[in-house]
Amino acid sequence: MTETGGALRLFVGDDWAEAHHDIELMDATGHRLAKARLP
Image 1: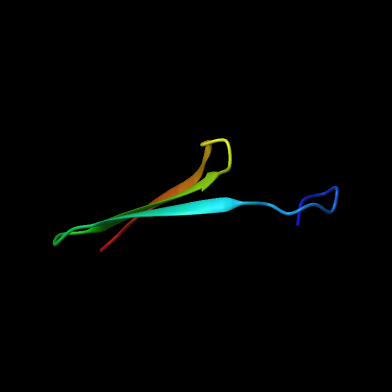
Image 2: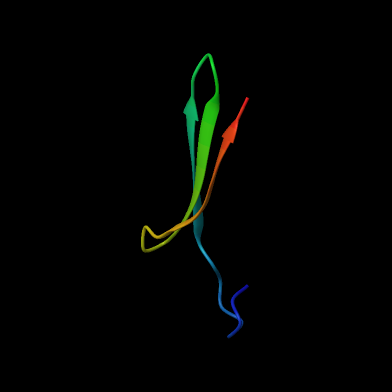
């Protein structure tokens, strides 16, 4: 929920590789909210 009570749409991207995995969290406008690299 947003501060105004509406729905919030998020997108998660996952780049799966042998050495590590990269993930990103983006909002509906394509703005990156967070990113991380996992072992």
